[in-house]
Image 1 (spheres, rainbow, N blue to C red):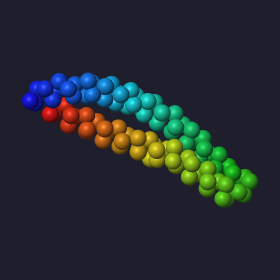
Image 2 (cartoon, rainbow, N blue to C red):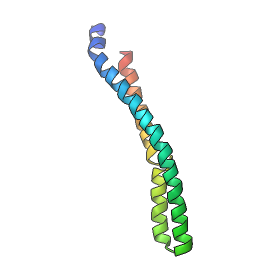
Image 3 (cartoon, one colour):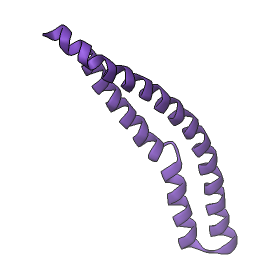
Image 4 (cartoon, rainbow, N blue to C red):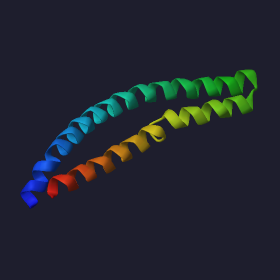
Length: 94
């Protein structure tokens, strides 16, 4: 019975493995690009607060820079990819 279940789950685990590899590559490349963009947005926010005196607008830009920094959305996507990877490993262990 266990062999039959492994045979039935093989296409799912294979597809999930390929999707995870693609998502990990996109996540790494996207994090690199978003880190550069976050730095530029942070510099823009500082310039807005210092030179223009628009504190509220500068803080909004800083929040956006934080969300796209490696500690915001990319961290969440890395966690999500890790969780899906654990599910994939559990399916392979059956």
